[in-house]
Image (tube, rainbow over all chains, first blue to last red; front, side, top):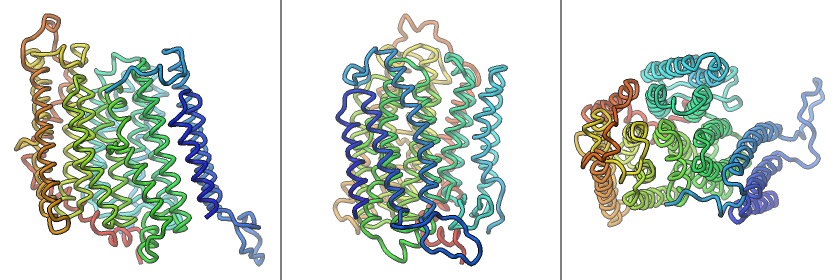
Length: 113
Length: 500
């Protein structure tokens, strides 16, 4: 139960930053917090107290207390995707600053309806 | 059953490879990038029609048997989506040859477009939950960049809004995937389905499904989550608006919801009610907001929300007839909405504006655009014999037939559906009145018809609108009914992927 509550709370903190903050960069930081909460959740899903690295040992040395390796592989992928997304959103922020001269979302609103 | 058909990975590999190839060799001559894009998408059309006749089959990536490896699953539902994606993207590429000359850097445009196609093909083919997320992000990130392609004030603002909401949705989906993995210990869709089938739903799985409804619902622009769509779709270049409205919200949103809730998690009363409420809200709110719009593309974007509401309503009712209507409407909407967006692009290309009040009388100057736009308007409003009529009819009859489950509510649902259809007609009469008929203003005297390749794409779409309507029984029998049967038969999907 603990990991679920912890990760949900971090996720909600990120959502709060995205919803309530008025600065583009702070919104981006909120997105990153959400992403890290999800990554943390994935790590904790595979975590095992006192577990060992899931390396294939020599024959006969069967260890049963493996940490689940799959979530760690998933996190590597999701971090890479997050990197691409962050590069994209920061590039957008730079372009927006060039056009509008501000990071304030209240001043960046030409679209309505 | 499992002959490892090499065609399946090609649907992802070809556009993915082409994306990078185009950017590399497009530096030499821009015309090469046109050629490569059209040829690759034409090959995809041929390929998707070739696999349409095949038995349902599974491709094991790297030879790993499920549930351990990643597998690609081709069943009639995936085939339907593959055909839609290939045909629309081929015609969009044809249209882009002339349209995108007004933008700089065509190779980058085609590169991103190909990435988007690769992402969508991946989502509809994959049989692995995390793999679905990866392809979803490929498609989504490419679409964020394409929305901002004009790099003007509005485009950047719309893209930022779309990106923030889209990536929050993606994170919710990934959170749902993590919860699903912790609850079932597997990521293979069929394996998850059989685990849930034997163990039943626990609270973790219910929380995960709520996250999936939120995440994929945002990708599908269902009403509480729709705010990004009316900004993002009109801001993109017209061919990209056609791709986003015609394909992306379906492949990433509706398809994923249908696959997860019918084939994997299993639909119960709670989920179907949520989908029905989302569908009705989208239909009503979308169309009411659309009627008041004066920007051609923004009006079309609100109609996308409304029409996806029809699909979601049919999916939610879930009776064989309603599902048939929903899947047929999915196909029809991608045809007529792409055509409408391409028409709006043609009007903008020729006149330089898309404000309805500044247009008028274009029928005499642009006969091809005018007539195809009328065909699409009649289709979306549900006028027989065009395709939109049949799918809406099926959904309405499906709603009335659900009276034994919902009682009086079934008739209210059907009545709302008819009313929304009427409001759609009203708003497209307005489009016809202000764009095509009326007096030609001074400024528009010198307007000319768009180039031949653009006309060709418009005409093919218009023929598809009419053809899907006239040949409705044939299309339903060949394409939609097998897909519907797959959706309704959860056990068949499991035994296809995990034989024995």
